[in-house]
Length: 67
Image 1 (cartoon, rainbow, N blue to C red):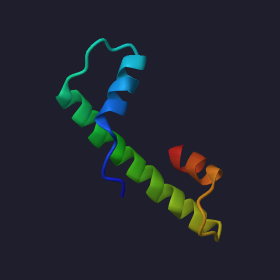
Image 2: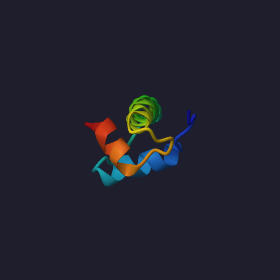
Image 3: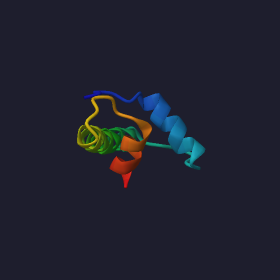
Image 4: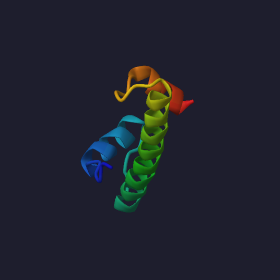
């Protein structure tokens, strides 16, 4: 599992979404939330690939996992 999203990149995303200022605690919470979501999507994508009898995760596996 990926252990890190750079906080600066997350701050940039928040600013591009319209935030003027972003607290450090908000960035840390966003980081934890994104890690949880990406982990769940990855697990579901692996399951979709295995169901299709593949070991390689493809774009469609990610699309299925996101639904």
